[in-house]
Length: 308
Image 1 (cartoon, rainbow, N blue to C red):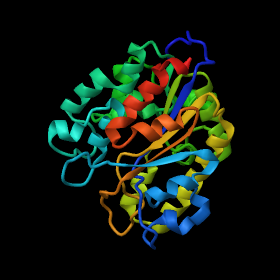
Image 2 (image 1 turned 45 degrees about the vertical axis):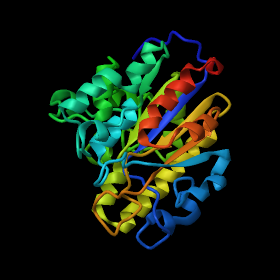
Image 3 (image 1 turned 60 degrees about the horizontal axis):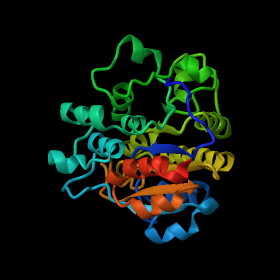
């Protein structure tokens, strides 16, 4: 990773990206509604809920459609989040799956990591650990986060880093890895939160990606989705409770709706929640309206004079 050359008393941002989490209805198709208080702070149903956010957080109902017809999709939504560019409008469509060549070019030039490094905001880090298979047989299609990490010249974290408490797998519990025979510790929500909070203390900007929510939405299994969201909400609560909110801004957002409406296996056109706690939560509340506002907001927070 990039050398730790800056005073880490400077303000920090921890950004947790949760795939496929929209603002849904209070009905039997929404596992967040069925969970009730157990889903806090992820159980957001309408903009009025912003006043009830736990631990003095804020919520912004965020447009994921970006002015383009059709259902928002992962590749274009994530590239928008990670660059601050309205990618569906630039390319004229919502792109599912993985970034295409045009999106990879945008990430190569404009990713949030590269923007922050250009302002000499460092260290910056991607907290996710990659499995050995990624290194031995690099997949043909790369996720937007992976393209952004590669473009910025950051190192990819490994399972050795995860074993050392220096990374989290996308399944922060490590159940998937353990089932595959990997020798990694099993984490509960609080242990995983300790790892992520520890990483955030040594970086100005830390990004962690979680995408099992999108898979659960496509699967339409209400029991699995409810269990997954219960544990994810517990993890988020543990992060917020452990982190130093006087120095750190915690931001959560998503690329499109999905898991909040299990009546369909497709993505939704629902707004997504952008949630923020800590030092500069009011900047997030003021600036964020669409997915294209996420990166500019984080850059403002970390480069403004008051960030020192």
